[in-house]
Structure formats: C-alpha cells, structure tokens
Length: 191
Figure (tube, rainbow, N blue to C red):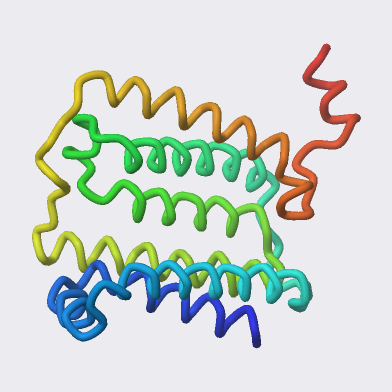
C-alpha cells in the first residue's frame, strides 16, 4: 500500500508542471517557497517509493517474456538518452519536446517487460501511467521547451547519457538492490 500511495503522490506532484494554470496558481499562492516545497515533496515521495519498494509484496502477477531482460536493457538505454537530452539544450530537446516523460515511458515499459511481480507492477505500471499522462498533457497544450539551442549540447547529452547508463548498470545492485549481471554472466561476455 505504501508503494502505491508513494507512486501516486509522486505522479501527482510531477504532473503539476504539465498544467501551467495550476502551476501558476500554486506559485502565486506559495510565492518563493513553491520551488522549495516542490523539491521537498519530490524528495519525500521518492523516499517513500524506496521504502515502499523494499517492503512491497513480490508475489508474481505474470511471467515476463524470456527476452524481457534484454529489452529492458535496451529500453533503459533509450531512457538514459532521453534524460541526457532533457538535461542539455540541444536540437534533440527541441525536436522531442518532452524527452524526460518519453524516458519515463521507456524506463517503465522496459522494467515491466523484465519483471512480473506485484511491486514491479505497482511501481513501473504507475510510472508508465504518469509518463503517458505527462506526454498527453504536454502535447495537448502544445508544449515546447525554451527555444534556446546551445552548440554541441546534443553530443554532450549523448556522452552524459552513456556515462550515466554505465554507472547505473554497475551500481544497480548497490542502489536498487537487484544485480543485473552475475559473475557467470560477465564470464560469458568476456569470451
């Protein structure tokens, strides 16, 4: 239940920017504290997700396909590329318009292909719904990022994306608690 509530709160908080009228009203009402409250709420809900994930039921809901693990690696790579595009002001950001939401959809979909337990369905299914809702709201209102494009930022975004993806692959067990590759898997790659 904690995981479900945490994902729902995280989604609601992060959908606020997708609705400019609501965001403007909150900023007018809260003044300068809006940014600090948004950040604090984001951190609290993220902490709730981590605790909820650690204590959630891992009962199987469905059997993921055999190719789900490989698909998840590919989808997660695309998600990290979208994160890099979001962080920098290149042409790709202008073209994609909502790269972070696109990344969330890829990340969640990949994880649903690789995991079929109840906790995964709640977390990744909830994040998929959030990402899709953010995309729908953004495209419906014709959202475009800042028109400022900086030279070289697409290349920087790609390098940062690959680096962050590599770090996550290496640190996944330490950060998330789930090992992606065993020593035996690494021996197969070394051959």
